[in-house]
Image 1 (cartoon, rainbow, N blue to C red):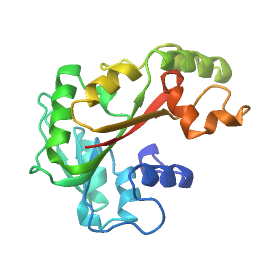
Image 2 (image 1 turned 135 degrees about the horizontal axis):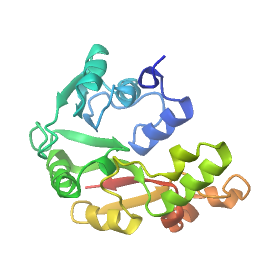
Image 3 (image 1 turned 180 degrees about the horizontal axis):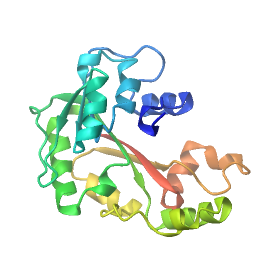
Image 4 (image 1 turned 30 degrees about the vertical axis):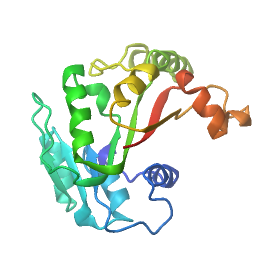
Amino acid sequence: NDFYDQPIAEATRKEVLRLCGLEGNVGEPKKRLLDFGAGGGRYMECFASVLAKENVAGVEVDDDQIARARAKGFCVAKLDASRASLPYADQAFEIVFSSNVIEHIPRELYLVYLQEIDRVLVPGGRFVVGTPNYPFKRFYDIKKGLKTGRFRYYFFDDPTHCNRLTCSQLEKDLKPYFKSIHLQPTYLLMERKLPFLKRPSVRHRLRYLGDKLVGVCIK
């Protein structure tokens, strides 16, 4: 089966729902969620397990991925890759989710998209964002390459990452729009051997040292 048709692992599903404020098996069906960079709808399926399906929307630039998501019954709008605009009314969503997307958007468009995300979120709404943590991401890439032997894959950075964000830069970019910004690493070196590194307070302090970042931002 194609990667994009694979269901999300249960542990990942639970963590994503927790970050979005939808933890547990019973969410709030009336909440509206936008998947920014929805791909083939893998995460949309996760959200539709706790939200009303008609309240889960997505945006995407790739026609094949849009077709995949629409075939699953989701409403996904096509974005124009040359301009930053979301086709929704002001305060249309309680939650905007974006995983491994913003690093692919040219910085000038990304900054406008942050304004658009702010516009479509209700007051008190939540933006959940995940992105690689530069420059430390490259250290983890080399470590993975040495461990797996996939040198060409890991030693050369992804050329589609045109918006390489540091932790401090991401926080600075988000600050004008959100009253609360909490970033933490998805993985820290040695966390399996040093359990204290899994404490939320420790992870937040060490967020600059992680492989990737995940953030919960409250408007």
